[in-house]
Length: 327
Image (cartoon, rainbow, N blue to C red; front, side, top):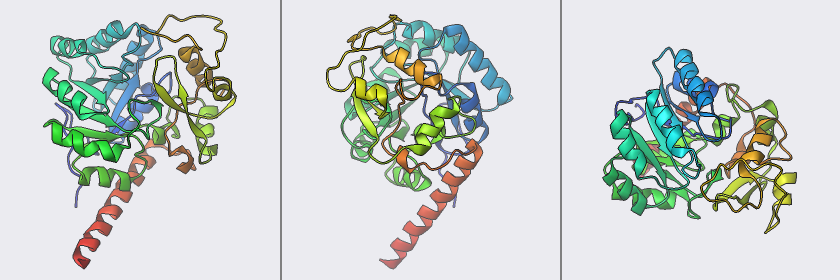
């Protein structure tokens, strides 16, 4: 018994697992390269960092993988520097570009110009069909259980069948995927693979500071709460002093405007709050995390996380086969 082969454009990873592109400064070259070396697909978040820094991380990831792994770049559509960041990543010949929290038609034209596959993160069959028509190499369908900015209030496994039926390109399941049994369930439903973010934050190689990772390990059930970010979307983050201070319609004084978003509510600065947590102050900044973060109990090497997922996948499949034989 083997795990089904995921193929997106030229990419054929050993395991059908894509690592989520988490910003700001959470998934950079360290995490992306580790996932690629472990047989998955790594993603560098280009959101909220200088373009030249992103270029340096792309090159560093190539060094760490000896040019053999698959490395992509994720950029939040809502950012003002979205076009410049995407084009710079494409100039570096990344394996693919991926984007969510809004929808860009232009990035497909840029992808054709630079010869780089493009993947859209969506939360509906309607947007999945549009992305396929525009030339998407694959679709990531993200459910309500995800961390960070959310595009829906519907659970992943409610949306997934609709998106699979709507398109012919590979569909990657995301949001609340934590174990190999989750991977097996998604694949049984027709997904080509999964995207995982939260589990990889609690890894040795993740680029986040130790305080950020430990916040995940210490999280209790119910501590992942919804906040309204200045992007205009709901986001899921771990409750702390900062989330309490922005509850409801509360507004915080902005010391410095980064002028980073196309449209901003100016209630607080989302970018600044993410930079604060990425510096290690996990009480006074946003700590984005998925709904099942409380199930993570340890910080492991990426290879061990991947090995565990594969083992759990086969165990889950074995159990399903035994159920069928009993019927």
